[in-house]
Image (cartoon, rainbow, N blue to C red; front, side, top):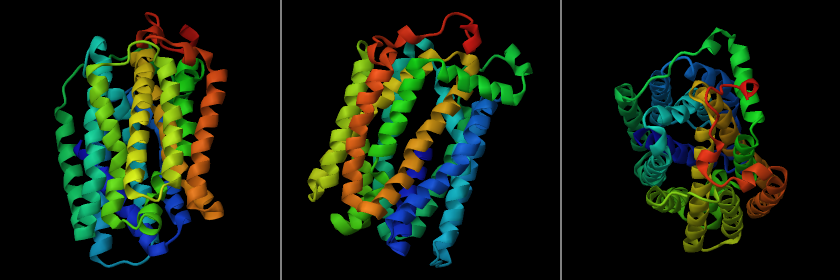
Amino acid sequence: MLARIAVLVQSVCVGWQVYDLTRSPLALGIVGLIEFVPMFLLALPAGELADRFDPRRIITLASLLEAASSALLLAFVLTHQTSVWPLYAVILLYGTARGFSGPASRSLLPFLVPPQKLPRSLAWGSSVTQLAIIAGPALGGFAYALGPAIAYGGALLASLVSAGGMPFLKGRRLEPDGAARASRLERVREGIEFVRSRPVVFGAISLDLFAVLLGGAASLLPVYARDILHAGPTGLGLLRSAPAAGAAVTALYIARRPVERGVGRAMFASVVVFGIGTIVFGVSRSFGLSLAALAVTGAADQISVYIRSALVQFATPDAMRGRVSAVNTLFISASNELGGFESGVTAALIGTVPAVVLGGVGTLVVVAVWMRIFPPLRTVDRMRDVMPREGELSPEAG
């Protein structure tokens, strides 16, 4: 939770600073692209590392690297820099840290809880994450209004505390397997082949990729806060928190009443609601309606994320969790950071509002196409239906 708050405080402040310095939606898109490049290059090797080394150590080192990026941003504001290029350089460092931490953090939870408690644990873990996503942007907006040095200093402190606490997490350890004799390249390729050969896994993570790639509006929120809704940095923090508020309520409900039947249909339905909520936000000129629309998109996305995460975790053997999580991380980073670049470019070409509305429509089209080309995902009933057979470690084993 502390690590997530640090990331989001920093994200809100960087987004506001970049747009304040440039007044360009394209500059906000470049932020997403710069963050995506190192994550794209590092995610698969990092997943292979997470299958050979303790994920706790990898997450700790990545958190220290994120703390270093916060320290550099603090130095940026204390020295009164006015060029956007140092911010881009720090974002590159931050993307490097995310590239290493993503697969490790996504593969850790199944080693902390027994399989029968995994669905509820995913929901409770998501609830904690969503509480952080609510608090982080709001704190970032308020702190930036008081002074960016306060915001970046708080992010630095939270990252350091998180890094210090990670090694104390207990739980079972990954048992070595015979595949460790294979080369690193072969092991990375094995993880890719595993995902590609499972329609439920590949369909779920690719649905999220294209739906968020087209329908995500987060990177353009500084434009809405400053120029369309006239809400200022505090309003930007509230806009960034609104999806998480909807997601947190939904996650708490799911933690008490998990989705047990018809999970495939529920996932597709939630993405449809996400697309509709994005369209409503795009055309809204009311701050209250915009907050409500974003809260709806967050609630819908939470259902999709919960089902996708559970399906991927249940379908993946222990020995491949890091590599499969790496592919999942790659898709997620593409949908978020590369989606931010796509939104910035589209907004620069056709305008901010048309870009957001067109993205929401694109999400609905993706749902229709994916329901047709991934029938096993559409028809999956229970989470446990996708569990691998005993001893199944690779596509060749199946």
